Amino acid sequence: MPRTRPAYPPDFRREAVELLRAGRTPRELAQSLGVSEQTLRNWRRQDQIDRHEHDDGPTSDERDELTRLRRENERLCQERDLLKRAAAFFATENGTR
Image 1 (cartoon, rainbow, N blue to C red):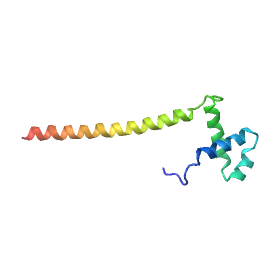
Image 2 (tube, rainbow, N blue to C red):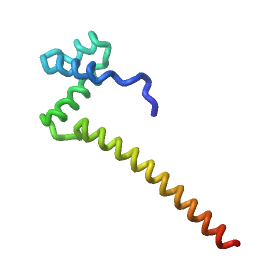
Image 3 (tube, one colour):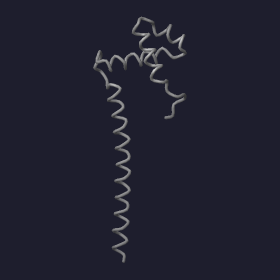
Image 4 (cartoon, helix red, strand yellow):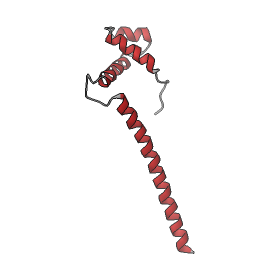
């Protein structure tokens, strides 16, 4: 599903999380930055996971690796399917000659 807006830059996210860690509330920070409170909470939660303060989800590095591996798996499945079709084609072509 396409995003409705581009992702926020990593530096922007880091600075927002640092402000939250410094004691700003998600509500006041959301108003000043123009970001939803839930987005700020999500960023803070992911930061806590990345810092190993919580262990109830994958770290950002693990998420990136999982995304990369899913893309690679999709590509390999497409290549496998193409080779299967090619093998079936050549098998029937050789059998009819």
